[in-house]
Length: 474
Image (tube, rainbow, N blue to C red):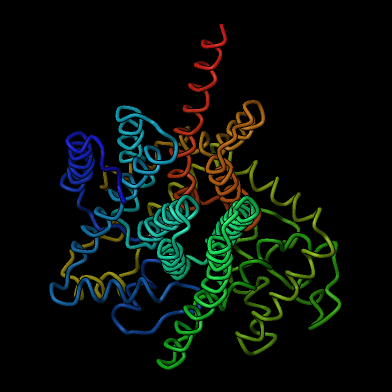
């Protein structure tokens, strides 16, 4: 399903991208850990249990990869392969659906392969690299389904999306939006073709295609999620989406200063006794994690984590329905905070683990399990980590580029559905960051970086087409 023309050049491009990735892997093979998340995944790999707000799937993957060698290097090797694959699929999409030539899509794919967030997370014991791979495959197979209307491609996109979500639940809105846009376009296309058809057999065939699409969507998705939940429950694990209410309520916590939740416990008492200022937008991450702040106080109040999370979800829905303007204001404030040099610098230092050392007990546990020699700051000597920390202007470009793309689409008004499909996915990624982030976090820009390269190719193609059309008219 990858481009088959220019096989000679295509092979050179694939070889070149893998060479770039392995060059960086050779000069910087350091295993990097992110305080909290990485340790949770390693805990899952070593014990088989998972906390409710982390992916158990990634922990199981670590356990499988490290089972024989007791080393994290094979995991990093797989992540390098996965990261290189995202660049190759990027070039395939640009060639197949947006008709860029070899030098154009090849240049963009090479740029993607040296992107700082991508290089940094290839070395991190984090879900980012594999979740990006499944996001890329989800987009690719969905585009292929829209162009061919073959159910096999739809099933592959659903499976890719499911794995993407099991690694990172933040992709749920993207998953639903992608399927919604594809379903509307495919259904409209089939109906339009059906009306023009004069052959009864063709009409029946097209109606069956519509029925098959909706059957696969509505049957496969619940089946996959219910199967995963059954497996988790059987082994005594909580589902990794059981902290969604906590995440949403803490992200929108400043709204509790002016809104009263009419059900559940009296939040005024919790807010008044909280160690964190409820109206401070910078304190939202503290509201989520620190003892004495909003979420920990709710868990203590309910004496049951699941009940506290369910209440948090209901409260978040109440805020969404009764104060949507307030949520939009929080999103705007979050977006503007992301653009600040100081916020991005702090986030880069935090992601590299340069502000909080690993404790001795944790170091010994990881060192014994994976034959590693770690110091309290295991990421400080990383070349890709230093590159990641210096790329502040790039991150600011990623945040501004969707606005540039929006203006380009408005001005040039393209007729290609695929352009609008990618545009809406790109914009949705930015909105997720603005609406759901509790603090500035560069890791959330990881999928935006990949789709920005895709959008960059699309924008270039639109401008080139506009220039060519003007030249022909003259």
